[in-house]
Length: 277
Image 1: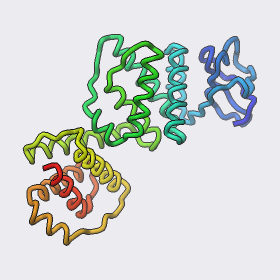
Image 2 (image 1 turned 135 degrees about the horizontal axis):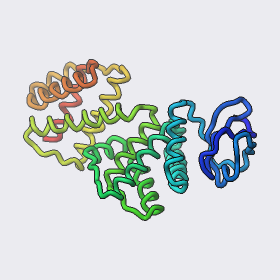
Image 3 (image 1 turned 90 degrees about the vertical axis):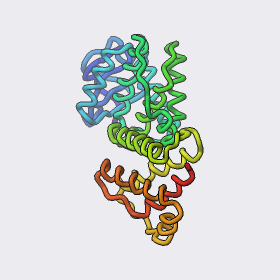
Image 4 (image 1 turned 45 degrees about the vertical axis):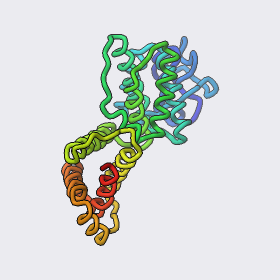
């Protein structure tokens, strides 16, 4: 990315599409960067606050469309928010977050203005699964609330946390949401089978959810787990209800993920289930 940059399209007073010396197309953000500028004008690096490559043509089109349809101050706020996320997470984010989070927050603010409140059924699970992302999401929602003088519902913290996790791990939101739904389904199955009501804020529940998350990640990554035949035999005899339920949960995971689950997982799951009872 070599300065100076040549303007290809002015989006608003603070955003332009430009090309660098190697003809790479970029989106440049800066106060007044597009004011009075036309196609072909040169921009030097010292007036640029932020620079986005957005290598996907589709994403660049989506971002251009968003910038043109939303208030400049809102775009500026979301750019500051994304910079804050990157600093707090101490990693480079997938650039898709510029499109995905900006679009999501614009829609969230619009819903609030219209008196609509979309519940987030996975809020506690999200906080348990992704604690750092959740903490940063709390900061993001607080900043947006303060700047815009609004009060977004707490459920939005969970949605933003998932966007952050998606941008950090380069995983799609649909995959992440599938895992959240799976864990929620397993929790409901545990309650039904053991005839208990899980305390979703208890340490044992948090441990179970984290274990399920790591199990799913291991399965997705194809990691092997050492067999625990002796321990499995003891647990099967001592805690037959929990042991059988563990296998029931494993079958649900296998069917959902469409991948085999190592037998040893039944041992660890049984111990977590026993703690819950």
